[in-house]
Length: 150
Image (cartoon, rainbow, N blue to C red; front, top):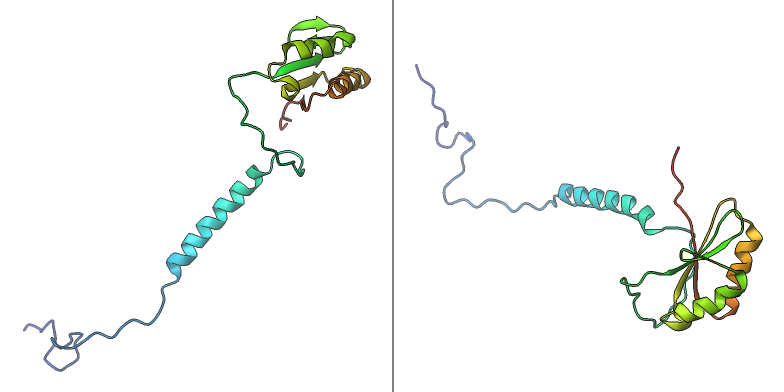
């Protein structure tokens, strides 16, 4: 009426002898390795575009100290009417360099940002930058907004 589940001795029903040794597996399981490599590939594909911001340029190496995050940079702005502002104060173009020299706490290494309105005269903005650069200020930059997707 009933059947034997394990099979008889010696019939090869899936059981091994008690004293018998199992043979070593000589195959390498590469599935986990492929999974890890695919995850790393995806991470690097996503992270690579984030590491290159702006125009690729070769920056000079310096022994300068790290920038102090507590200090705000000095901003020089040019509005559409061609008026020049140092921080929030209107100023004549001839007074830009003397005022910068007076308020620059780190001397000629002070960070100076030039902001120009989209409709501002290009020549006025370049005159301001040329005067600041000719005065010896080394850390001069332009401020822009990031383009928004439409």
